[in-house]
Length: 467
Image 1 (cartoon, one colour):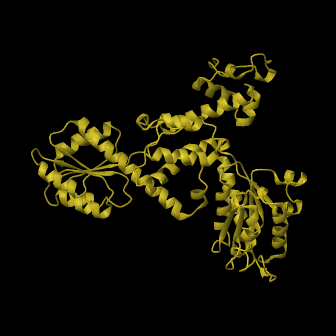
Image 2: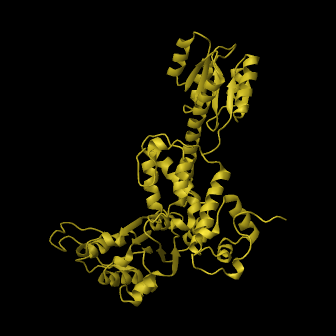
Image 3: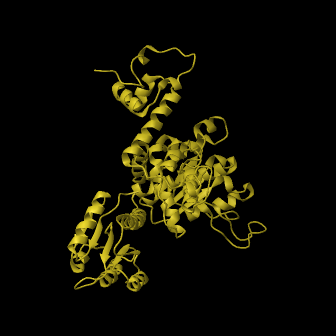
């Protein structure tokens, strides 16, 4: 979650301005102080990242008029109003006009800061929601394939390069990694983006309907064919045909698909008329099609026709640093779809996210984020009542991620430091310092009866040597 924005404080009383500025400064808030509503109004815009706190009784433009004008600029801007003693009726009127809350003078600093903190948190949720919606609207690859990891960056680079060509592609990856998203991005950023993108799950098409589904049929071609129907291949002409789980396609259909791709024509079932088609095929598979073709489970000629380029989508466990960002994105999107306020990601949840193995990949993460956005318990998420921890700072998140990464490398290598150094590409002293700071003991990861390699001797983990 982004840091809090500034507090725009408006009051024509100098002593109040001085006191509130001190309170907010000690609480870590940036304060923009104005003695007139008219000057404060110029600061506000729809992109203002903070909140407005204003006294109601002021000379010139009063707080009520400032509230009305602020609501016209941004109806979602939280406005906290300050009223004099016994002026609750005016405060209620302000709430009716859209004020977030009111505070009656005199008030304790603790009460004031609590209201400001809640209003500021609400504003940050609104700002983050808008940022996510803008990112989706901009339709950039960074907003579609989300992540800051090296793996995510490489994937975006590959997709951008493939989108600029018209070659056939096979997309490999485990279930739930987003093979369909990758195929869709290749289409959307290609010269064919204005034409149809037709996705077919080959495993979900009944074998008796495969030919009709792909090639279409004429009226009367079979008993239930009361009218003509174009198939998926013809419908995709001019655009992209995405063949998901293509390894499930029957061998007989593979032969007909190969002919259509090579000759760029199809014939509907029950017709002898050749229909020209021009499409780009993108196939996806969980299994190695080269190996499947060698075993006779997939036509080798179709494999070679499709495999001009092969692209592998990495599993989520290989880009674990992207998990918090993806989780927040999915949770915010789900909250917006269900008219809920996004909930902050706490330290307990972050720890769960970055230590989970994610066998279901991005699909599993999306489901967990949607449950969390709706306040529903799940196998990964704490109960809603447990989701109240303190948010982690950037330094704490980096430290938590470093711990997970180092411990995972140690576990996978049996505590062999030389292998960890090679995997992480860092100097021995850097690893030693990090392990000492994080309290990681490599002895926990070594086989109980394993020998100590020569290059694993020396101070790694525990206390640093004196220099």
